[in-house]
Length: 431
Image (cartoon, rainbow, N blue to C red; front, side, top):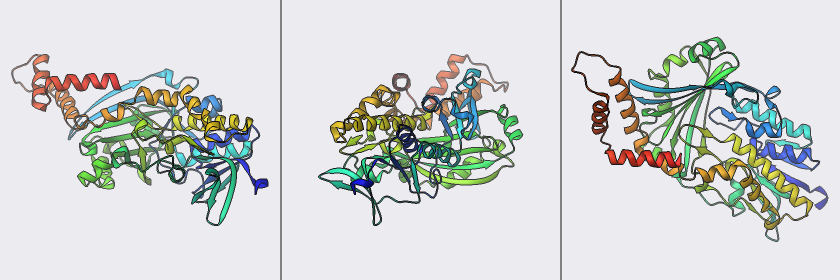
């Protein structure tokens, strides 16, 4: 059995798993990359954008060969309330300069490419394998079990997604609560590139990213997103699972309502629905992070809860890539000392802290709590859109000073001035 043992078995060929497998194989280690789906990416769903800094450090100028869609040059956040909307837009040409800041992506294509890079480096990619259990020896993880088959390794890297079976079987994670995760639903809507360029004021290479807050989520914790691809749009909604259950909302119906709203319908008019997907999203940050390592095992990517939602931006893939890198480097150091015990793998946490992963999650540790504030999803969008509408309305009525209009709108919103100041202070400090 020992003769068949590899250095690492990586479970999950998403960005975290494939990055770890790529780096280990590149350094000459024997690695098996196990994927449950028939191909990498076929079971993955995400909004549609990746910040490029983490992968660019590992594979410089990866976009010259990777199947990226568009370089995001235009950011928008839109507040919605019925027929009203207010958008804040930002365009920065530097985002599209050398080392593009972020790209829109289609995961099925991108994940397949990254897993192929791991294969090219020497990793063995095994698709269509469902891992049922871990193999233990003297309390230490020494491999995986898939059906009747066992595969042995010095270390297992669990990159098997938010609902990580392996992290639980290793005793590193417990069940998470409905309040700690969100359900995302998304459609890929095909449109000609020229139509996308005209509607979003972009060109063939550049793209737009837009987030929505307000009644698109029924006023509960959640929001909408839209990303422009080359010949399609990624459009979706995200809902906190606990709120979804409490309100008995049906995400698929909410998405259809969203598409037919006056704010979205003109953007997707004439489009063809090419794909529908739904997925759980970790949203509690450090609040749902499992133990990151144990005897013979590491946890990376969504399995470790490495997603950061700040309301105005959502990050996950750069955290996944960086955690895959940290996992690979921790395994290589453990290999050098032939110590794959918990103590031998504890370097993983240090590497995550030295990178941006734990640094950023710790810096924004209060973000999940702030985003649980229901006023963020109903009263504040109403306040913003109502005030903007009043500012731009000319109807012959007696004029009022701007300060008076603002005060009257705040009073009508039901938000006390003290509460407004407190929410603003918490948001400014935490986000």
